Image (cartoon, rainbow, N blue to C red):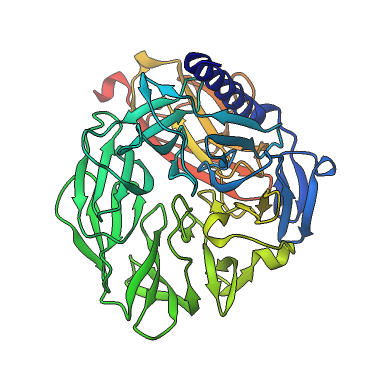
Length: 476
């Protein structure tokens, strides 16, 4: 198969998988397997490895070899290292796995086959990033857009470039790279011209609009991705920072700190309140491995922290509940042997889906579902803050989505009230949105209040209140 045929095959596979993942949601049938755990597949057709009140796990259908799993923020799609020159693509819907071979030529640029040791990857909702060496020279950044397009060359360096870690950025859109020389650089999606953020960096974490990093000392710094000088975010700490994570909202920060001759301590800090939330230890994060997933990962909107490495003398994948102050070794809970800590774990943005690779032969992927404690996301479109009679009738839309794609939105719970009276959707309740129409009969002069509620199957409720003014001609 020639380079162009390979590229075409990759495009078709990616198109099929992305379309399948996109279409799986509306027709998906959810099954309850725990008090607050739902799965988007029939559990009777899955290889179940754990079924408890607060944990449900299955073996994902994957290729012969699997490591370095990377899960999309919402959790519906998972990419993993399959072989030295191939990626595997699986979904949480237990669809048949796909193999995505990296073609010999992308955008006319040839590259050598990827060497052993895994790949450096990053993910966000619509893109997967990865690195590869060009003609045995500097690292280049490639991307796989999810919606029916081919693998693309994102950035080709003109000078030596060796990338240690990639972090997806949503604000501004792009990718942040930590180079082996300690430089932290932003590669914007629009210009793709790198901009240096900091130097001498040992570990980093990226949130929308911000980057947190340490320079091997006892302080954590942060800098705006929009520009500006770094500022101290935390410290001095009781030891050197060896690992770092920040929740997507930038409210909390987790770090492993170690003093000379002492065991490491895992700390979680509240950046808003300026206090230490919790500390456990001793911990020893795994040694650096090319392409490994993050040692620490903090979830958004929940009190969950995932840590891979050694804790109190045991290697494993640990789940820390910050609200209940509990630590659970997930590998032990699942009774899985040979979990490779440095290759093991990734979780979705909410921390309700966890995927990791076992070290067994052949290596396999295990997907764990934890209780859903996160309300759905909801948006109100097309409703201005000021309405005049000439704009009526006015249509507006309410969109909703389960953050973790695990429980699914319960359409029967959708409630839309205008000034205390229930509104009826103009075209029924669709799987991902509902349409409504405002007329003069429904509005009252002056201030109006729209109150919208919806819940997922696990009972988590999202609510939005929007106030707008209906101005009559004599009020101009």
